[in-house]
Image (cartoon, rainbow, N blue to C red; front, side, top):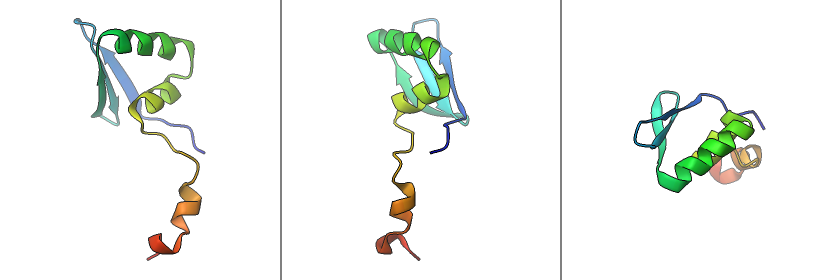
Length: 73
């Protein structure tokens, strides 16, 4: 499974955190969720944390799904 990349985040003055992926907004966190996110992103792999929080990460079954007869063209 490839490592996620292309994620950035911006903490705004009102405490809101905006996560972007390749320049497009992927999620907005406010309040306690923003605080929890910031603590987690500081303690781990920032790209993986942002991918998890936005739901934009691979599940590991992409190769199997690509070979399914329904998905062949």
